[in-house]
Length: 279
Image (tube, rainbow, N blue to C red; front, top):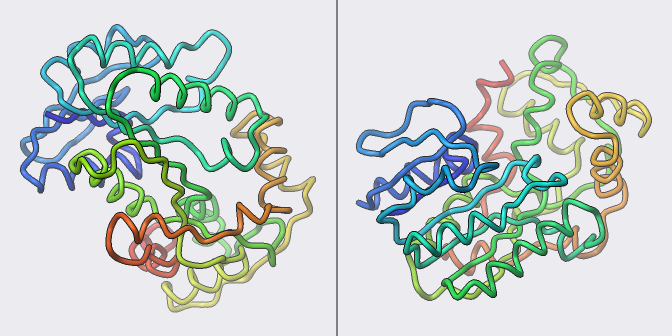
């Protein structure tokens, strides 16, 4: 049996589906009641209380660990989840980390994630670590304005990074959970090409078959908007990456293709599959 945390999100949902289709017994864990694929067991649990995860872990051979941002806050103890997994007899943990632990290692959240990576490495369990960069699905931030006004408003319109499709992250996670050969690896996950916000706008317009205008925000305007849904420090951090990505953050990684045997999906593919969100 394989346990998937964050099972109702844009990585956990396709991962749960892929594992079920592969014939695995799957337990999907989320904070709230949600629909899951037929044959999948669903457990409601808050990872902020690791002991409450124990019923989901009993009998599991592997765990996909995806943490929400609040689990890196002061007082949180995500390392205890790894301890619970080991105590329950789990043999393998695949951790969703972030490319930022390598490229920008000194922010509070990234330092906490790197510490969690170290805990996993030292746990005695089999492990794999996934480090994605920017997500293609972050474009959903623009869905409302595209629906209402046919406009994407974003900063740094001509500065890009190789955003990765969450479905590719899920496919890599499935491979790491199911195949022994990926144990002990830390994998950087990106899309196949650098794409700018202006280029993403063009891809969304092409998927819709209707014009979408790009409107460039100043950094200050973007921070004000982002601060409504995240801490100001995290907004600044995100804007630093979007505005001045380092060479490592701009690099197209070979790891998705190395694991899956195919190139990662381009942003245009993601836009076409999610076009309903922008209509």
